[in-house]
Image (tube, rainbow, N blue to C red):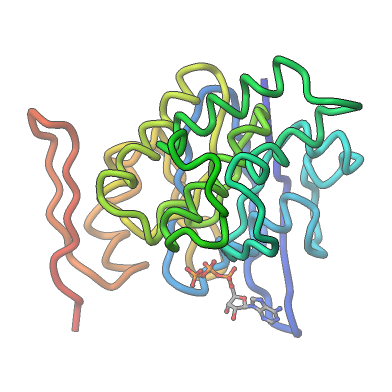
Length: 250
Ligand SMILES: Nc1ncnc2c1ncn2[C@@H]1O[C@H](COP(=O)(O)OP(=O)(O)OP(=O)(O)O)[C@@H](O)[C@H]1O
């Protein structure tokens, strides 16, 4: 079953082509890392796929009515703005909006509790969200997206600003979701975590998809040099795959 299908997607902003000819599908059970240097177009690609940005080509999500789209995909944007001083629990409960008709159901409450637990927020549920640290606020916004309980989760740099334990735990949560048959498309700059946790990587650069496949096939020395301008150490170890950027190429 396909959760997202892009066909020949292109975006031009202020007369500049950000990317063109992006064709890909995301099926069930995938944790897909969207990687690429600053300005490669990761945010633009996700926003266009969601129908939030004018584009050419087709996106299966953009074609949906907004209410159906909100049940098909959750979206965590890069901006971490929390506008009102509501409690963590109230904010995460907003993730249930696409499913609600009247009062909260037991299923809504269970989804909120599960999302709070996943993001290690249960003890903070009654705190005011705007008074949390930046990383804690990011975890609340991930929890809101998780509470939406959609087949596909799309998140723009969800682990940026989290401490190492919460970065790893969040990637593991996404991987658990994928094992349970959901899928996640997450942009990230930490290539080590991408290599370790993602089942598939999409490498965006030079205005197109440069590679799409298992991490070992995408994070090759040649592509890493060509797209990121760096060298790296990578190995399959007893602790899983290790990828460590080393030097900037001159
Ligand atoms: N509203 C806009 N108008 C004009 N250009 C834009 C606009 N938004 C983004 N861009 C440009 O589009 C390109 C892609 O930006 P985008 O934010 O998608 O990159 P990104 O890969 O997500 O980058 P980063 O890793 O820095 O977050 C950049 O060159 C950016 O300057």
